[in-house]
Image 1 (spheres, rainbow, N blue to C red):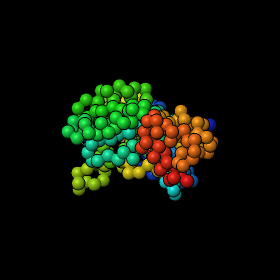
Image 2: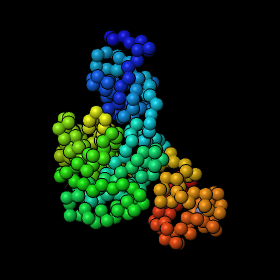
Image 3: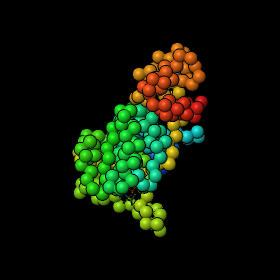
Length: 294
Ligand SMILES: Nc1nc2c(ncn2[C@@H]2O[C@H](COP(=O)(O)OP(=O)(O)OP(=O)(O)O)[C@@H](O)[C@H]2O)c(=O)[nH]1
Ligand SMILES: [Mg+2]
Ligand SMILES: [Zn+2]
């Protein structure tokens, strides 16, 4: 039993989260299995935490330090932390299996709400179906979002350069290539992502927990499990418009301050759509999210 009094609390970073169990790493590079007190689950991969030793291998997480960002999703019943202290959200899509544009749109909103810079990564550029999707996804580039088209099986230098100095998270549906990108980006830096946890029979290596890797001293990357839905219940209707870079300049321009941008006269957004200054599908998306949150 190693006794450490409260005044000697150590700081560590959560590098993996499995529900209520975690792996933490201290600044000297040692890793420990970590549990929490009182069934706390408000910790996430990327968190800086205070820990106390239970024994030489195990520690208990006492609390987290102030976060620069917190990414989470929330459905009608519960919220789920995804990662903390992330500076860049890599939303990964690929032509195969068919990507969900809705998930992309929702992830973009979640990034805006969490004040995390989003970057759309269209992976599997080597596939013949890539070009159709590149054309579709270029729509978001037109709205002001950054887009990188690469193949995890070829050259990932373009993406690797963009990650310098960032703590980035890979997010997206299952099968888009997040773990393959992780391996390619890590190169020889670290042991490959050798996870063969579930679905052994089908030979698939689906990621089951968030895992943080060091790309170099100043750059980190989090691989995360595939998402099917992105619950946005934590967003406030009153703030929604500010999460649309293509429409936020119209804040306060409608005749009614509580305009729902549907039937009201003097709606600046509807007028902008009529004048082809806003894409009609963007206003429709805003209306749909507003309905969902009402
Ligand atoms: N052709 C091609 N295949 C790729 C590329 N990147 C990944 N794949 C393949 O796509 C499949 C899924 O890749 P993963 O990296 O496991 O996908 P993932 O996003 O981590 O999936 P989950 O962990 O389930 O969320 C694997 O068979 C990869 O070999 C790519 O750039 N081109
Ligand atoms: Mg994976
Ligand atoms: Zn309006």
